Image 1: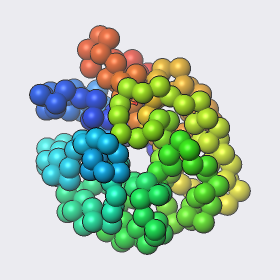
Image 2: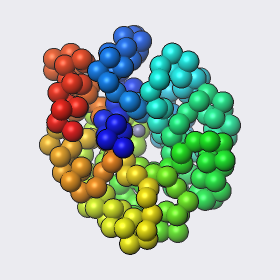
Image 3: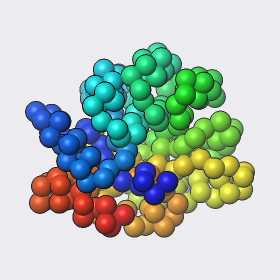
Length: 220
Ligand code: DX5
Ligand code: ZN
């Protein structure tokens, strides 16, 4: 589980040279990689597709954490299973049937997670929590890297940790969006198990990817 804390998001990598970035992440001991899939419809942006997941799977041993920011996430389950995804999350409001989605993700051998947008409260997930492996809590509105962290996020992580205890469940809690050097410590203290690290962490660009990544790993 400690291996999952630092989860770099490839969306913040260098699009002209993802290979160089991935080689550095591997060399620094990163075990999990966050891959954002967008459809220009659920969010007003595009990012990676399922093909990219397969290409990375063929060349690297990271656990692949795929975050679906798409309408009709059902259509992505089979392609992602074939591509070799390990963790798959979809937005709670992108489907009428989150429990069916989760069951199908898990039947296909992957870990299933639900994503909570900043305006949605953890209580919304009460009926779904027994069927999932992880909850992804957005710290920003989805669609773009580099946005400012919304403060209510920490409280939601804490609430989800409380619900986990109360319900006797063991799902992991992932924070994504605006995670930086300061809120990293707070998020971990309040119960986050996985931190997606982008523009304010691993990919800060201060001293180059390798050194920034090592420094952030030490902090977390
Ligand atoms: C935002 C994506 C995030 C994003 C995070 O819509 O889901 O994964 O890449 O980037 P930062 O850490 O820069 O907010
Ligand atoms: Zn994401």
